[in-house]
Image (tube, rainbow over the protein chains, first blue to last red):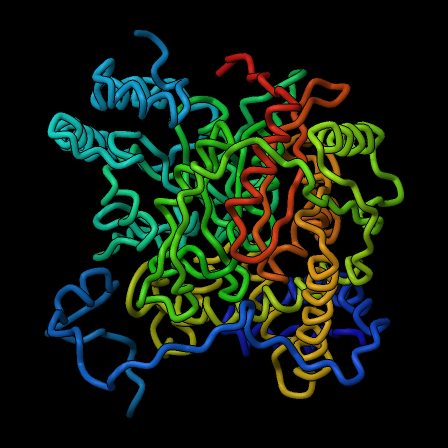
Length: 95
Length: 493
């Protein structure tokens, strides 16, 4: 499988990373190098193998669905690049 | 007493308990060594005031007879650990200025036991790298040097490795996703253990690939690794994959007696073009364990070859998901916007400016392998191969093997910049012996075992059974005793 510039641009868009037009050929080439390395996985017979879901067999613990923490809006926002009146501020998203 | 910073954790602990030294003296010795170590670029955020406050508190605890193992011992903390009020930015520009409002469970466990934090340690950005050259803080330099070239300390825990090898701290925390504790430990002549997945809580450790990440200690000896690991471990309700298992007294398990233990030597780790120094080291290590009474058995781990390709699907996939949170809204860097820019431009510009090249590349590869139409071909296939790799290990352990001996790295430390023009895949090969262990969730330890023909340190890796760190540490202890590695880098910095 080979990635062309259009696919590279589409992946960059999906990942929400701005990539300049003139950087796309090199990016596509880099993806192709890595993907051709990954292609080796096609040599493995995986017929009937279940995909691994858990590293160590364990049952996830359950707990009551109750509030155990909170009421610290100031703390939560202390690192925000732009916080105003108890909200995170972002560019206008609704006209 | 001079050179307190050169002590091991065990010696310092014993001297503290005996009242021979104080934590303040020990901490001051380390702070002086750090002040004199700018050329290594290992410590990137310094916390001397916090360190001296913690040291005074530790001295008071010791005076009262309440001295847990780590009490009063000065450590460096990898920048990947969130430390309350202290910059924690995973060596990334995107977390510039971030000061967590909380403490990671592992660092909290260490502080509860009285440990002292000297500062934060350099690393590869988001732990993605094997040479510590992807950091926003610049490269870390290996204290080991044999000519005029600056060498890499390895990565991603390169700052931790350099700091311990150069005696800037008694020990350091590291994290290991594909070899990031064991490879730098090998490159700098120190000990590093990655415990079983689930031993250490991941809570408050900035996530790279959640099904692979584990924290562990980087130390000057196997005994120190046992002491520090025990304090770092433990069940944590805040990490749903943290194991609810009792943590044994690892240090008490260090008897050095490995008679009758079965050590597996996997044939797939003997690679074409492996340097003769590595071959010799591996053979020597095998002979040492045999001489100590272990039974040596040739084994096969048939899917070894596919570990790196599987890793380079699973790790970027998880990273692309984990790193989606860096959007310029809640913390860290936000790009300056131009008139008319909307929220999508804010995300795209912020992430383009905030992430370095390697991180951008992996996030995009991860996005691609998870995207519609490719999920089965790449991601699901990689997860199936991962299941087979894990089964390889289960089969040999079920057949009676207690631990597996391999080289830790395919070479000794290389020069900074040497791989700059290489294909990224060449850099990935650094982790060829370590990455299988993360995929299978097993404990692995790198022990310094000799030097190569250039005089640079080399490490051997021992891989253990799940939750069997105590037994693994004991085998490592026997290997350490037999290898008698005592070389230290000559101070040039």
